[in-house]
Length: 127
Image (cartoon, rainbow, N blue to C red; front, top):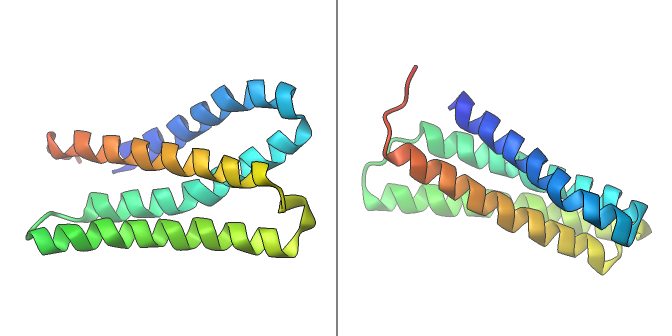
């Protein structure tokens, strides 16, 4: 499991560096703040969801659906709740660009997490 968590963190930071560099020159310093906050808001629930799904041994289809929807609910509550909280409390985050950064990191980390989990299904976990 630690390898998958490390892969998720490294992949998220690599993706951030990849999109941040051109965005910094196009949109300025607000891109730095928005992208880092979006990365943090999206990475924390992705790590929790990945850890939960990695420990889970699939049994029945109902249990699998519970894990999938539970991870999705956790991610949505954390990301949308955190985004709305920042939006309502701090005028700096009342920009469309902030929500676009959240969307980009949400979708990237969700996709990357699914790829990591799918790869895990084909391999037994080494301890």
